[in-house]
Image (tube, rainbow, N blue to C red; front, side, top):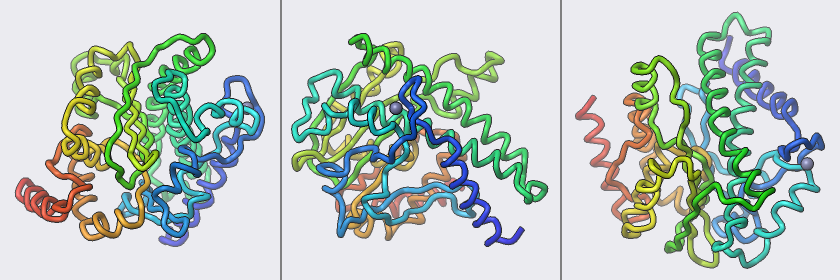
Length: 336
Ligand SMILES: [Zn+2]
């Protein structure tokens, strides 16, 4: 199969997959979903846009270089088919106002909803796309084992997310509080990030399986949202109380340590743990574009050692970022 044929196959199967899994995520609803932004466009996303455009971190497992950056218009970027119009309007009314009360448990909970469904949606799209590829006329030329492995991984990921999904709805419906949320105001940085990510690293999960002969029964998912709000940046994090023992000390560091340290933590999350984030054109041009190759080398390094909690002493939001990344580059070369 030629490169352009594969690019077309990738593009077509992705679009078909998007059509095939289109349904409102509200439990029991079968209406058509509307395209909605993970974080609202007016008041949040537009605060980091230049001429209505934002830069997005993207992953395509089939590209020679899977990790890359792309500029997209604010209407399409950071959005997906989530809830039908009726449910979208009804659910998010409380947090789509000008002033959001972050001391209110339910307001924080609503931020988890689009975030968790975006994670589930991306995995479902991938699974559907891989299946379509396997059924395509090119199937004999595609590495089926690789695709089956990816499908298996995405299915496990969805299972882990489902545990939290159920608890979110229980809270919403019964006014219970299954989660712990924490909020912190930071100086404004030009980034929006929304994710549920695994606290456990791939290596830890692998070692557990080797020792116990089965997968870890529960993965501890960390919820994180970072976005500009009222000329500041808001850091909103949460975790399920079932994971408190593991996650309380970890999440607390984001709320106790200096702003410089927290910015370093965010920088590392962007490289190693979180996939759904966008940044302003200025931040991309000033910081990332120049060291894009090192940024990607860092990502690949963490994949090789299976450690998503790898930590480099770098701060994307400080002026010395370029020099710090040069040091990382030398470090990565030296350990090769
Ligand atoms: Zn619905």
